Length: 331
Image 1 (cartoon, rainbow, N blue to C red):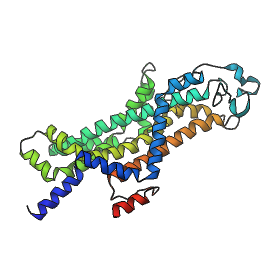
Image 2: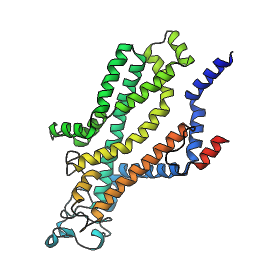
Image 3: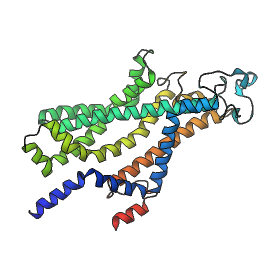
Image 4: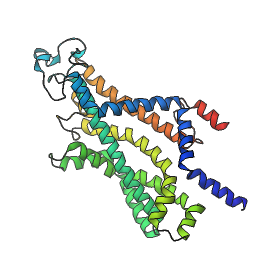
């Protein structure tokens, strides 16, 4: 076997490495990044809180929609009675101004909505983007041109303006969290498609992909057996970075009043309602804003860690907790 063919096959093996060996290397590199491990623990805790929200509110003995007018001072405009916004054994994080609704219950229930919308929107973006990107790269020149121009149009569309327009005309009876996830996912898949198309064009030139096509395999089988394993790394990396972007988009839409509607809580909606209370009841703004900031930061750091673990040749953008990983890879 010629040295050139060996080099080509080695390059292909690097992209489509055996699952077991690739997984071991990935986890080894990820474990070497302390910042990514901390971020992963934070994300896991937030997801656990979101999934266990009904249990947590039941443990506290409260729910996110019940009003407690006796816990707010109507003479002062509805400021919570007591220190630190009414924190007590019954209300662990205090209560909302004016309504007296339990802040802890709304915060954990809001986590379900915000994280659920973000993950669902990311899944939609990845499914559409991978399908369009692979079809454009594997199809005819005419199909590639059509799908690429459609993708360019999608990328050029301003997400917030289009989302505002679509959310404003949909009937209020449609479940709002589902609608927000659909709108974000259906508008913002363009960059995923571009990344997948570029990577697929690179993979098409590898010997094992060319051999599969020459052997008579159909395009679907070639994509499923030969291309998707090589696309896993860039798609997973970009998806990990899309989640915090989608959380911010949901929060922004709720802040603008077209996202999740009351009484369903979300972090963006809570921040919207708290913007006039930051002086009288600062905890009402600080808790949801802090949860949103922590989630976005943790997911961003985790996404960067996943990218570095999947592609050890690329230096970490954040350069936090990756020094040992770079030393091991250099060795």
